[in-house]
Picture (cartoon, helix red, strand yellow):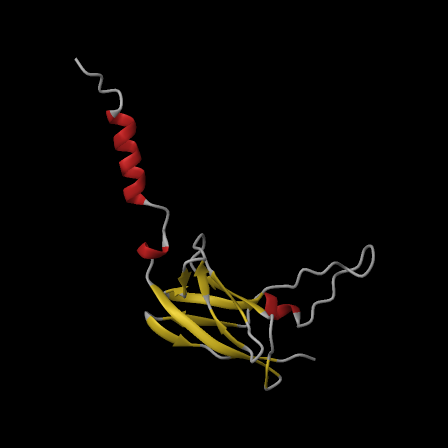
Length: 136
């Protein structure tokens, strides 16, 4: 008689594969592009954005501006876009250390932009979201 000890672990493995972990193929996405303007001028290269879903515990997307201030949001290494629904767009703080002990690091933009530039709703298909921020 053959042993059937593999049946339970095998079924558990198949169940885990079918449930998944919210891979991009199981998530409704919208492509998101746009331009970031600082005081009316294109931002330039290297400004990092985060698209943080309002629904807590849900993975967000990121973007980095090119030399003309344009960006395209990325969900994962293999998937561009942002989850469909409401999200908060904010700047990602640069990796800089404070200038001295006991001092806060100096951010290039007002702190409020690192919490929220604005809230947007992402739709299926193409979304163009231009952002205007003010730098003192």
